[in-house]
Length: 270
View 1: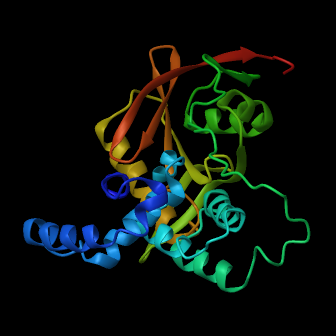
View 2: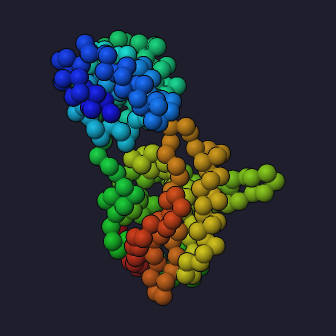
View 3: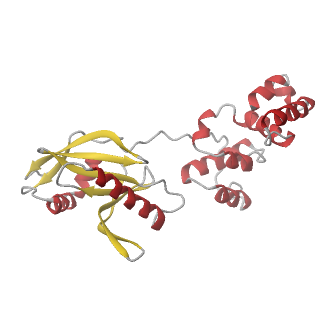
Protein backbone atom coordinates (compact mmCIF):
# COMPACT_ATOMS: atom_id res chain seq x y z
CA UNK A 1 0.00 0.00 0.00
CA UNK A 2 2.79 2.44 0.91
CA UNK A 3 4.61 1.77 -2.36
CA UNK A 4 1.43 2.32 -4.39
CA UNK A 5 0.81 5.66 -2.66
CA UNK A 6 4.38 6.87 -3.20
CA UNK A 7 4.34 5.89 -6.89
CA UNK A 8 0.93 7.51 -7.42
CA UNK A 9 2.25 10.71 -5.85
CA UNK A 10 5.12 10.87 -8.31
CA UNK A 11 7.93 9.13 -6.45
CA UNK A 12 9.88 9.39 -3.22
CA UNK A 13 10.97 13.05 -3.54
CA UNK A 14 7.51 14.42 -4.29
CA UNK A 15 5.44 12.09 -2.07
CA UNK A 16 5.30 14.29 1.01
CA UNK A 17 3.99 17.30 -0.93
CA UNK A 18 0.97 15.67 -2.57
CA UNK A 19 -1.47 14.94 0.23
CA UNK A 20 -4.64 15.67 -1.78
CA UNK A 21 -4.36 12.23 -3.36
CA UNK A 22 -4.27 10.63 0.10
CA UNK A 23 -7.49 12.43 1.09
CA UNK A 24 -9.26 11.16 -2.05
CA UNK A 25 -7.97 7.63 -1.58
CA UNK A 26 -8.98 7.65 2.07
CA UNK A 27 -12.60 8.45 1.19
CA UNK A 28 -12.73 5.83 -1.58
CA UNK A 29 -11.01 3.04 0.40
CA UNK A 30 -13.20 3.68 3.45
CA UNK A 31 -16.30 3.40 1.24
CA UNK A 32 -15.05 0.11 -0.20
CA UNK A 33 -13.45 -1.58 2.81
CA UNK A 34 -14.58 0.26 5.94
CA UNK A 35 -12.41 1.53 8.80
CA UNK A 36 -8.62 1.55 8.80
CA UNK A 37 -8.04 3.78 5.78
CA UNK A 38 -8.24 7.29 7.25
CA UNK A 39 -5.65 9.84 6.10
CA UNK A 40 -3.51 9.28 9.20
CA UNK A 41 -3.14 5.56 8.48
CA UNK A 42 -2.48 6.11 4.78
CA UNK A 43 0.28 8.57 5.67
CA UNK A 44 1.71 5.92 8.00
CA UNK A 45 1.64 3.36 5.19
CA UNK A 46 3.50 5.83 3.00
CA UNK A 47 6.01 6.64 5.74
CA UNK A 48 6.48 2.93 6.41
CA UNK A 49 7.41 2.31 2.78
CA UNK A 50 9.78 5.30 2.68
CA UNK A 51 11.55 4.07 5.83
CA UNK A 52 11.56 0.33 5.19
CA UNK A 53 11.31 -0.27 1.42
CA UNK A 54 14.63 -2.15 1.45
CA UNK A 55 13.72 -4.27 4.46
CA UNK A 56 10.95 -6.56 3.22
CA UNK A 57 12.12 -9.48 5.37
CA UNK A 58 11.41 -7.50 8.53
CA UNK A 59 7.73 -8.42 8.24
CA UNK A 60 8.54 -11.84 9.74
CA UNK A 61 10.09 -10.32 12.86
CA UNK A 62 8.04 -7.22 13.76
CA UNK A 63 4.35 -6.43 14.00
CA UNK A 64 2.58 -3.33 12.68
CA UNK A 65 2.41 -2.08 16.29
CA UNK A 66 6.22 -2.28 16.46
CA UNK A 67 6.48 -0.27 13.25
CA UNK A 68 4.01 2.35 14.50
CA UNK A 69 6.32 3.01 17.44
CA UNK A 70 9.43 3.07 15.24
CA UNK A 71 8.10 5.43 12.55
CA UNK A 72 8.46 8.60 14.70
CA UNK A 73 12.18 7.79 15.11
CA UNK A 74 13.64 9.91 12.31
CA UNK A 75 17.34 9.09 12.68
CA UNK A 76 18.06 5.96 10.60
CA UNK A 77 20.89 4.71 12.82
CA UNK A 78 18.73 5.11 15.89
CA UNK A 79 15.77 3.38 14.24
CA UNK A 80 17.94 0.49 13.04
CA UNK A 81 19.32 0.10 16.57
CA UNK A 82 15.82 -0.40 17.99
CA UNK A 83 14.88 -2.76 15.14
CA UNK A 84 17.94 -4.92 15.85
CA UNK A 85 17.12 -4.84 19.56
CA UNK A 86 13.56 -6.05 18.86
CA UNK A 87 14.83 -8.91 16.71
CA UNK A 88 17.70 -9.95 18.99
CA UNK A 89 15.76 -9.82 22.28
CA UNK A 90 12.29 -10.61 20.87
CA UNK A 91 10.93 -7.40 22.43
CA UNK A 92 7.21 -6.92 22.89
CA UNK A 93 5.68 -3.59 21.83
CA UNK A 94 5.57 -2.54 25.48
CA UNK A 95 9.25 -3.38 25.94
CA UNK A 96 10.16 -1.47 22.77
CA UNK A 97 8.36 1.64 24.04
CA UNK A 98 10.25 1.35 27.30
CA UNK A 99 13.60 1.17 25.48
CA UNK A 100 12.77 4.22 23.36
CA UNK A 101 11.49 6.19 26.36
CA UNK A 102 14.63 5.39 28.36
CA UNK A 103 16.84 6.70 25.50
CA UNK A 104 18.56 3.35 25.17
CA UNK A 105 20.30 4.39 21.94
CA UNK A 106 21.50 7.74 23.29
CA UNK A 107 23.05 5.99 26.29
CA UNK A 108 25.28 3.78 24.13
CA UNK A 109 28.93 4.42 24.94
CA UNK A 110 30.17 3.54 21.43
CA UNK A 111 27.78 4.43 18.63
CA UNK A 112 28.78 3.06 15.20
CA UNK A 113 28.84 5.51 12.31
CA UNK A 114 26.50 3.33 10.28
CA UNK A 115 24.07 0.81 11.75
CA UNK A 116 22.55 -1.74 9.38
CA UNK A 117 19.51 -3.89 10.11
CA UNK A 118 20.67 -7.38 11.01
CA UNK A 119 18.29 -10.12 9.89
CA UNK A 120 19.24 -13.37 11.65
CA UNK A 121 19.60 -16.54 9.65
CA UNK A 122 16.69 -18.90 10.15
CA UNK A 123 17.63 -21.56 12.66
CA UNK A 124 15.60 -24.76 12.61
CA UNK A 125 15.27 -27.49 15.22
CA UNK A 126 17.14 -29.80 12.82
CA UNK A 127 19.99 -27.37 12.06
CA UNK A 128 23.27 -29.15 12.75
CA UNK A 129 21.55 -32.42 13.61
CA UNK A 130 23.27 -35.70 12.77
CA UNK A 131 21.52 -38.62 11.10
CA UNK A 132 21.74 -41.22 12.47
CA UNK A 133 22.08 -39.93 16.02
CA UNK A 134 24.47 -42.08 18.05
CA UNK A 135 23.91 -42.76 21.73
CA UNK A 136 26.71 -44.29 23.77
CA UNK A 137 25.55 -47.19 25.97
CA UNK A 138 27.38 -49.65 28.14
CA UNK A 139 24.56 -52.19 28.41
CA UNK A 140 21.41 -53.17 26.59
CA UNK A 141 18.49 -50.75 26.76
CA UNK A 142 15.55 -52.78 28.03
CA UNK A 143 13.10 -50.02 28.94
CA UNK A 144 12.49 -46.25 28.94
CA UNK A 145 14.36 -45.82 32.22
CA UNK A 146 17.50 -47.43 30.73
CA UNK A 147 17.28 -45.11 27.72
CA UNK A 148 16.95 -42.07 29.98
CA UNK A 149 19.93 -43.08 32.14
CA UNK A 150 22.14 -43.60 29.08
CA UNK A 151 21.21 -40.21 27.66
CA UNK A 152 21.85 -38.51 31.01
CA UNK A 153 25.24 -40.23 31.32
CA UNK A 154 26.31 -38.83 27.95
CA UNK A 155 24.48 -35.49 27.78
CA UNK A 156 27.25 -33.45 26.15
CA UNK A 157 27.67 -35.97 23.36
CA UNK A 158 23.91 -36.37 22.96
CA UNK A 159 23.49 -32.59 22.59
CA UNK A 160 26.20 -32.49 19.91
CA UNK A 161 24.24 -35.12 18.00
CA UNK A 162 21.01 -33.13 18.30
CA UNK A 163 22.59 -29.92 17.00
CA UNK A 164 23.61 -26.53 18.34
CA UNK A 165 22.27 -24.55 21.27
CA UNK A 166 20.91 -27.31 23.52
CA UNK A 167 21.32 -27.15 27.28
CA UNK A 168 20.04 -29.36 30.10
CA UNK A 169 17.32 -28.13 32.47
CA UNK A 170 16.12 -31.23 34.33
CA UNK A 171 15.00 -34.85 34.08
CA UNK A 172 11.76 -36.18 35.51
CA UNK A 173 10.81 -32.52 35.77
CA UNK A 174 7.73 -32.12 37.96
CA UNK A 175 5.09 -29.69 36.81
CA UNK A 176 1.69 -29.23 38.44
CA UNK A 177 -1.72 -28.49 37.04
CA UNK A 178 -4.24 -27.96 39.80
CA UNK A 179 -3.89 -30.87 42.23
CA UNK A 180 -2.20 -33.12 39.66
CA UNK A 181 1.56 -33.53 39.28
CA UNK A 182 3.19 -34.60 36.03
CA UNK A 183 6.76 -35.67 35.31
CA UNK A 184 8.52 -34.79 32.05
CA UNK A 185 11.26 -37.28 31.09
CA UNK A 186 13.73 -34.60 29.96
CA UNK A 187 13.42 -30.82 29.86
CA UNK A 188 15.93 -28.99 27.67
CA UNK A 189 16.37 -25.43 26.47
CA UNK A 190 17.77 -24.28 23.15
CA UNK A 191 19.24 -20.78 23.26
CA UNK A 192 19.38 -20.49 19.46
CA UNK A 193 15.71 -21.37 19.09
CA UNK A 194 15.02 -19.47 22.33
CA UNK A 195 12.57 -22.06 23.61
CA UNK A 196 12.14 -25.02 25.94
CA UNK A 197 12.27 -28.55 24.52
CA UNK A 198 10.11 -31.23 26.15
CA UNK A 199 11.51 -34.74 25.55
CA UNK A 200 9.45 -37.86 26.16
CA UNK A 201 10.84 -41.40 25.83
CA UNK A 202 8.87 -44.41 24.58
CA UNK A 203 10.22 -47.97 24.44
CA UNK A 204 7.62 -48.85 21.79
CA UNK A 205 6.09 -47.52 18.58
CA UNK A 206 4.61 -44.04 18.57
CA UNK A 207 0.91 -43.98 19.46
CA UNK A 208 -1.73 -41.32 18.90
CA UNK A 209 -2.01 -40.57 22.61
CA UNK A 210 1.71 -39.78 22.82
CA UNK A 211 1.28 -36.65 20.72
CA UNK A 212 -1.65 -35.47 22.86
CA UNK A 213 0.31 -36.06 26.07
CA UNK A 214 3.45 -34.18 24.99
CA UNK A 215 1.34 -31.31 23.63
CA UNK A 216 -0.27 -31.10 27.08
CA UNK A 217 3.19 -30.88 28.66
CA UNK A 218 4.24 -28.26 26.10
CA UNK A 219 1.22 -26.12 27.01
CA UNK A 220 2.00 -26.45 30.72
CA UNK A 221 5.60 -25.32 30.14
CA UNK A 222 4.34 -22.35 28.09
CA UNK A 223 1.88 -21.42 30.83
CA UNK A 224 4.03 -22.07 33.89
CA UNK A 225 7.69 -21.33 33.16
CA UNK A 226 8.08 -19.85 29.66
CA UNK A 227 9.14 -16.19 29.75
CA UNK A 228 7.38 -13.61 27.51
CA UNK A 229 10.46 -13.29 25.29
CA UNK A 230 10.71 -17.07 24.75
CA UNK A 231 9.31 -18.81 21.69
CA UNK A 232 6.72 -21.56 22.07
CA UNK A 233 7.89 -24.89 23.44
CA UNK A 234 8.84 -27.68 21.02
CA UNK A 235 8.39 -31.38 21.74
CA UNK A 236 10.53 -34.41 20.93
CA UNK A 237 9.30 -37.99 21.30
CA UNK A 238 11.95 -40.70 21.07
CA UNK A 239 10.15 -43.93 20.20
CA UNK A 240 11.27 -47.47 19.34
CA UNK A 241 10.52 -48.92 15.90
CA UNK A 242 11.76 -52.50 15.43
CA UNK A 243 15.42 -52.34 16.45
CA UNK A 244 15.80 -48.58 15.99
CA UNK A 245 14.95 -45.55 18.06
CA UNK A 246 13.23 -42.75 16.10
CA UNK A 247 13.25 -39.04 16.97
CA UNK A 248 9.88 -37.37 16.27
CA UNK A 249 9.49 -33.58 16.43
CA UNK A 250 6.27 -31.92 17.59
CA UNK A 251 5.75 -28.25 16.86
CA UNK A 252 2.38 -26.55 16.78
CA UNK A 253 -0.39 -28.90 15.76
CA UNK A 254 1.51 -31.60 13.91
CA UNK A 255 4.39 -34.02 14.05
CA UNK A 256 7.17 -32.68 11.86
CA UNK A 257 7.80 -35.42 9.27
CA UNK A 258 11.50 -35.79 10.03
CA UNK A 259 12.64 -39.05 11.51
CA UNK A 260 16.16 -39.62 12.79
CA UNK A 261 17.45 -43.00 13.86
CA UNK A 262 19.21 -43.38 17.19
CA UNK A 263 21.93 -46.02 16.87
CA UNK A 264 23.62 -47.53 19.90
CA UNK A 265 27.40 -47.33 20.18
CA UNK A 266 28.28 -49.95 22.77
CA UNK A 267 31.19 -49.06 25.10
CA UNK A 268 32.14 -46.16 22.85
CA UNK A 269 34.61 -43.59 24.18
CA UNK A 270 32.95 -40.57 22.60
